[in-house]
Structures are given as C-alpha cells and as structure tokens.
Image 1 (tube, rainbow, N blue to C red):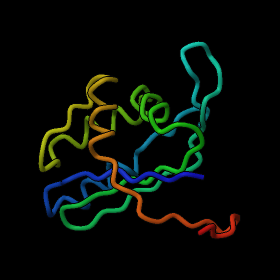
Image 2: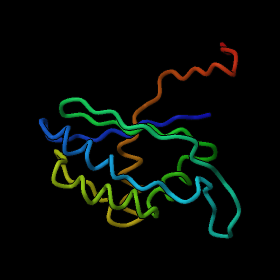
Image 3: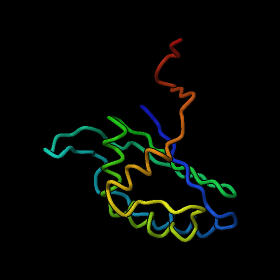
Image 4: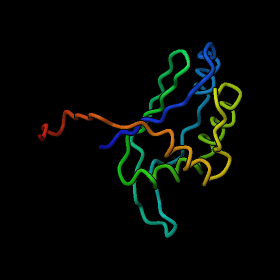
Length: 125
C-alpha cells in the first residue's frame, strides 16, 4: 500500500500544543473515498503524525490515487478542524480553508518517497 508524507513547518517550542490538537482529532466516519458519482475510488488505511522541533510530518497509508485522497481529506470535518487549530503554530501560513487550497497545499507539502518496503511484498529490483 502506498504511504505519503506531508511536511509541516512549525514554530519550534510548540510540540505540546500541537500534540494536544491531535489528541482531540476526530476520525472520519468511514475510510472509504468516493468520487463525485459515489463510486469507491480509494481508502485511507492509516495515518500517523510525528513531530520534532520545527518539523511535523503526517503519514497517510492509502489505496487509490493520491489526488482523490487529498480531496477526501479536504472535506473531512476533523481534518479541517485540525488545520484551523494549527494555524497559530505554523512557521508559514497554509491555504487549507477550501478544497482547492487544501489540495494545492497537500501537493506542495508532499515529501518525495525514495524508498518504501513492505513485509507482505517481496523486494523487486
């Protein structure tokens, strides 16, 4: 399953406040990602957030296309609330108030994957 990493530049010294924000995170009712016609096009399998000093990284394991995952996340009330609460702790503002702004920010913040290995798939050269 693909995993993506989204980088956030944050103000150093805010780790505990950000940890509190994520402690109150409300998960989506369903991990299923639907297109505009109601067809299943993906699924969020897991997420994780790591933080140290002035860097926070959100990992998302998913099925489907990353653009569909980003659009789905942009509409989730819990994700929108976290983005709103993070604003005072960001080193640079992020335009996440609309679906379009969120997806563009998501694309710009996605880190390059240079290696991904899975225990359930053999390494393929």
